[in-house]
Image 1: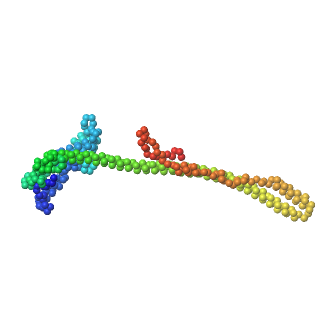
Image 2: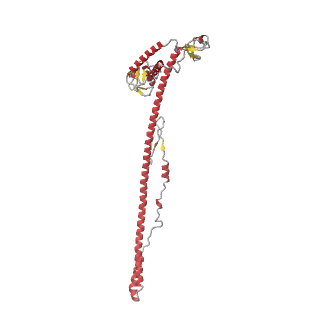
Image 3: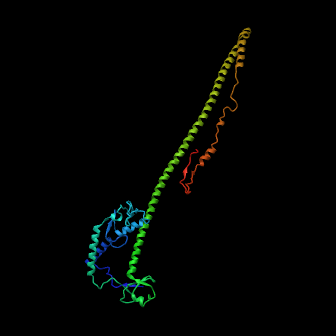
Length: 362
């Protein structure tokens, strides 16, 4: 159903004191609209801690939506101190005392402004010409106002359309009752949406706290992991020093024995060289009897004694080898490479716990 206004709206180019005053009143009216019911504030008007205003009834509706199961009320029906809801304008959390909504301060200034505004609007409406009503008119029937609502076609219409027009077989209802019902439904939906937004904001806050906890837990686990590996490195370094000490000890022992043999053989060689030189000099003795009786006998005895005391001791074959200190670290390397996180099973509900590193076996 098409319909049109019964009067022409003011032109865009209109100006003057009346237009300026109308614009000012319109701006004032916007400031006096409740963000919940989208109507002008109704007394009493409560002021929230965030300085935003609400109708007391709207504030009570929001509080009831935020506490649908009634957990915020005690056995006596009195609101428990600490009950809360969020401001629909800025999402600031409002904490109530034991008086509940009635403990919020009334904004008498806004109530007085509303009274003055309504008085001014009443005066302005009385001063308006009666031939300028803002009334919707039916396009199918001249001079017929839109005063009923077709429930079948979901459109406003006039009485003539119901009696003689295309809506005569449709179900209709008074326009004002439909208007009132729709506004109530819209107000209820707004309250439900505000409550839903509050729940969503709560989930967002929980997720933000979860993200912070994840970051902190990740940092803690990294520090623990680094500490475990530092202890493993320290253990490996300590064991390396022990094994290097065994090699050094064996090396020193073998070097000491070999060098003692070198010293011993050197002394024997030096004595033998001196004996050879003495024998060569005795060979120069010109007198045969003197050579035989003195030099030859003495030198021969000394040579025989040197031969008897000469030692041919030497280390066993492969004495210089250190191959018995070879180790096989492949199993240890494989164990280190297989270090991984251990996942545990939770309690009787079989919920998974956070994974943690188990280094107790290393």
